[in-house]
Length: 431
Image (cartoon, rainbow, N blue to C red; front, side):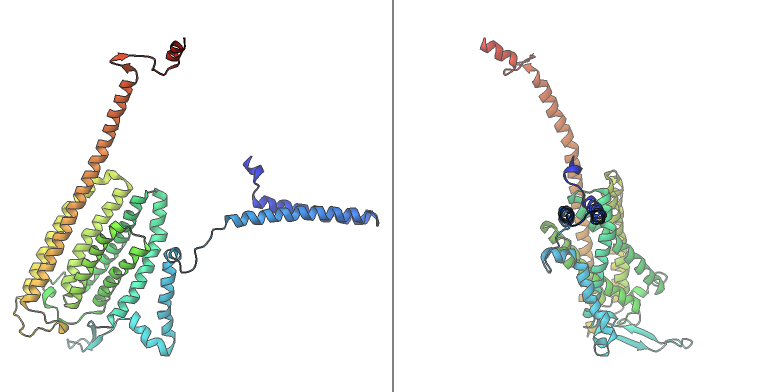
């Protein structure tokens, strides 16, 4: 019945085409067989069929127009949220296209490539190639800004082509969608960072020779891969601030996210500015590995709540990771600053071998570990409370249903088959 009442636009188009073909055939036959008297009849039949064809084509076009969705106004709130990755990509393309012209190439290079590089001669006699090392400077802010745009584009790509498809397939409720997206994004970031950071530690012999953590030479210089790693880390955590707006984060979750991002930025920037590059990298790898396990367990927990035991086992790994981080930071800072203290410290050259620097580094490391552990306890307590509430809710409902069923057929402890307002009682009253 619905198909007869509202035919599809494709059927209207086909029917209109058939009517037009029938009209042309009839017109030729009528013109060949009729004289001047039949011309008026032919014209009237043509007009009727043209009206019919036009009506069908009009209904078809109206049906197609109804299906078209309205795009939000340009530069509106909804337009920016839907197309923020494309807008950011256009901004990034300006810097890339600037490399094509001689007048803007120097400015574009500041944003795209690493700056503040120094060439050092080969230390060994056999080595013929000179080393190209880096230090930090004000131009690093431009490089961080450009790779922050790259991080926003990668974030949107993972969200659209991976996480959104999983959300549609699993059909998560809205409360779980935001947490699932957060865990999915962090899992990808932590996995890539762990692989990348481990490769740097192996290539610079930090795992085979742990003394390089406190006696790296020269102490105020970095290799290309080390500096690029820190620039990428700073860019990622800076990109998380606009993502709060792009991902429509709830107001109650914003303070927690700001504290989480601010702590990472503070410690990564501290290790970068104080030239504690190897120590910061090693601590980041241990921290990211534990966080990676955390978010992977959360992903399994969101897919099926039967994996709650794995989440509880992860808490043990989490606490062990915090303890190892504290031990490594205390030993490294102690050996690094125990060789003697400089009377004239200079933070710009990396000479921070003073008691104040030692206390600052150790206190910040201990504070962050205590804060993360405290958050773990709070999260576990909330999950236990939610599980108790879900377990108690069905039992309370069963008790209520049992009480209602027992009261339904009794009156003052005696079973009754009729209610006060039953038809049988009404008949007795009427009689």
